Image 1 (spheres, rainbow, N blue to C red):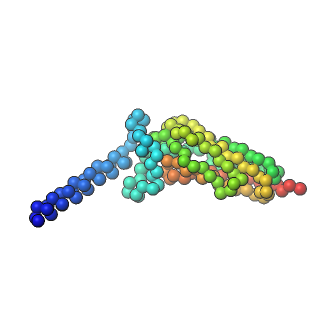
Image 2: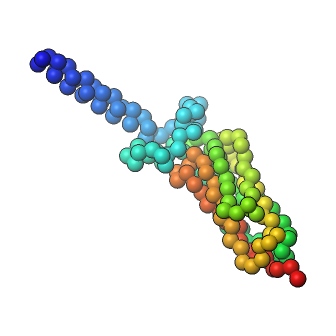
Image 3: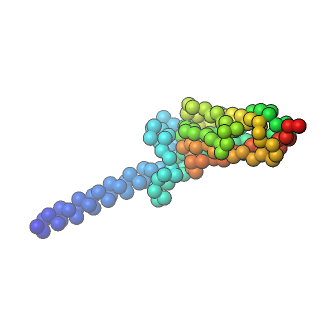
Length: 162
């Protein structure tokens, strides 16, 4: 019985040390782009336990502008704007979703991975039919970044049809 307790203690001690080694790998900086694995690209740092969040080895969305003011338009006009960005992170950027709070604002995003240092664009189309008055349309981009959501905004004034 005494040996069984010792065996169980040593087993748990070894298991705890193994976890520590894995935890250290999770926060090491990736310096060679050839060593990037699919699991590094698709991991979502926001869902990780707080002590395991990796904010170094993630993709980073760097937009030229986060908010675009389309000015004043007449109701029924359609606006299209391209939000240009660069992946300034260490791994390829994968955008998994882009959405707005209204069906009148529709974002389109690149479906392929964007390599570190490469550029891309989010194209947002706004249909002003039935939307008279001041407009502020948030666009949420979900990607393998930290935090996982990036906000853009489309603003302007829609003059009612007469």
